[in-house]
Amino acid sequence: MLKIALIASLLLISATLVSAVTVEETEQLTFEVNQRAPAWSPDGQLITYSSEQAIWFMNADGSEQTRIYDTIAWEGEPSFSADGKFIYFATEHVQPFSSNFVSIRMVEVAEKSNSFQVADSTTDKRAPVMSPDGTKIAYLSKAAGNYDIWVMNPDGSSNRQITDSSSDEGAPAWSPDGKVLVYSLGGNIWKVGIDGSVPVVLRDDAFENTHPVFSPDGTKIAFVSDRSGNFDLWVMNSDNLGIEQITFDNSSQTHPAWSPEGDKLAFASNEGGDFNIWTITLSDTNSPIELGQDKELIVEEEKLDIIKEIEEFVLESPLRTLVILFAMSVVTMLFFLRNFLKGLD
Image (cartoon, rainbow, N blue to C red; front, side):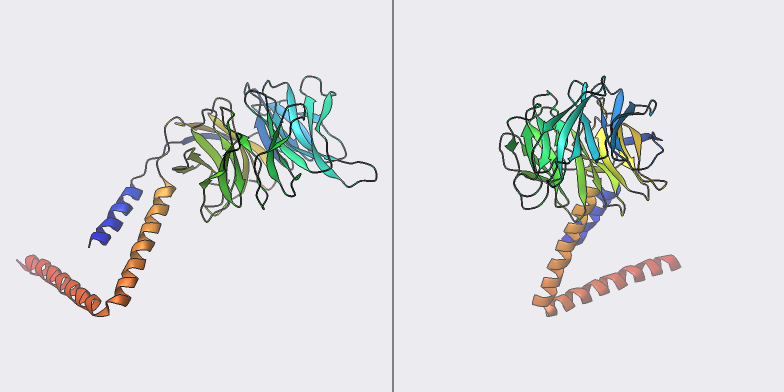
């Protein structure tokens, strides 16, 4: 009976959840083909993104879309420097009589013709993102065999490996204080300090979770997950408990990016057929998110544990089980009989 009461109380708790993040408005900014990987400027006035293998930027309302860098090679994964003067991005690098590889380049926003190679090597380097204080760039590199997270100085010097796993890490994102990087690995969300600390898993479940990014105040992490059946945007507390679904489309959403004020997320969505850049306005982002879906998972785990214990009890004590079931059936019959007789009065 105690276990039954526990199940009931857990279900009651999960049915009275309170949402912390409110979706106010969703707006499509681009209407082309293959627009991806948006990133905000530090002042929140511009959004850079990739479009058909070239680097673009636009005003935060979608106006004045401008191509800033385009060659015959692939370019993508742009992000602004901490002062907003440069855009860092990944580009396919071609050398004569050599295999192609991906490297990191930067271009000046004001003078589009000024571009510079930042990280030049014969191994792939991509997904560059500068720390909030402008002193480091985190990126993915295959220097150790597969994609791991590295950091370097803005000029490409002092490369240092941060993670070392047998699988490919996803693109890193900085915490506001510049001490922690969050990333995806094996469908889970991880974080690691740049001081050489051991990586810690934040979200480890049966779903595919990718593209995590810290909110400007560091209390939330937006990420992509297929836990709803589609790849939607979700937000969780940065302590890994409590999650909230943000988008609810039957399409795929990806590459979330927080605005500097923390009141919007830019992202790419293929709603309508082609990937384009969208923004979603949020409110109530300062309050912690209730356990939400996590409570539902806790309830399911508790129910599974209780069912397992009941099964073990039945196998170990079949006679006692029959006696208990008989007693419960008698009590149930007496209860219904009493109510029936009261109805005749």
